[in-house]
Amino acid sequence: MFGIHFRMDKKSPLPSLEFTHSFLSVAREGSLSGAAAELGLSQPTVGRHIRLLEQELGVSLFQRHPRGLAPTAEGTRLIPLAADIAAAAHRFGIAAQGLTGDVSGTVRITASVFMSHYVMPAIIADLRRDEPGIDVVLIPSDDSENLLFREADIAVRMYPPTQLELIRRHICDMDIAQYATRDYIARKGFPKRFDDYGEHDIVGYDRDDRMLRLMAEHGIAMTPDMFTVRTDNQAAYWALVQAGCGIGFAPRIPCLRQHDIVEIPFPFDIPQLPVWLAVHERLRHVPRIDRVWCAIEAGLRRQLILSTA
Image (cartoon, rainbow, N blue to C red; front, side, top):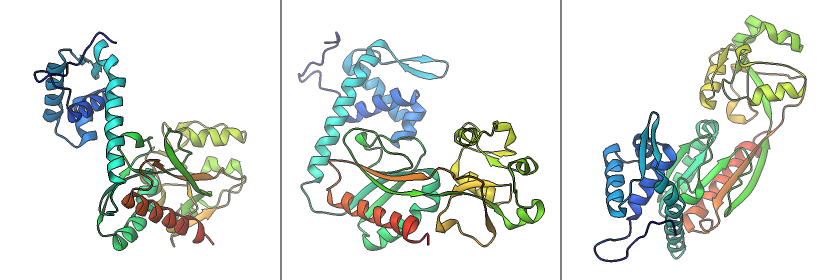
């Protein structure tokens, strides 16, 4: 179909699944080092996979450019076929897992950086106490992980997942509030009007423009340089607020209620942050995935809903 043919004979076997995963990862990441980090392999191993795959197929798959590796024309044509192979292998594995009632094994969970630091640890601790046979891999990420290719089994997301073949469940909507340390407020006082914020230190984001868009919706023009301290990492953001760097925003959840943190009234309602769970539809009823799904759902509701009173 593409002018490239796989010969199914003893001298020319089909590409191994391991090589196919390495090929797809290098295509996504744009480098051997990025693919190695994603796959948990060494860079020389990934490079060897690509070389052997090129030898098996008889084509060059990547070409070097100033920022790393880019697929050749032949490589680009093979990407969707390789993705089909990986997806079929994943479906095969899911079907096999569904045939056993064993709840032991590994479950990979991806959640936002903030949730991974402040909400998920307690949930995972409870899960491990109740299900010691289940190992957990937590992947803190604010990017969309592809559940279809087993980068994660279950996702906790701050937006409705849109990937096909996923089961989604809306857990709750978290209120957002602004906070500062008591020491900061003692030094600077409470802002009572928007004009007062010009005299305050605001912990903001650098490339993330969500806060700027929120202010613009209420007629307040702001630019990133108006934030005296900036970071796009959610865990680092809250750590900066805790250290007294200024006023910052965070979900209004019990685990952030600390003696030295003060909530500051805001003059308008801040949009809530939704919390969603997602899992591949074929994985949902695999016994260990089902146990972890139920534990996460119960833990999120306990921490984010029942404890907010």
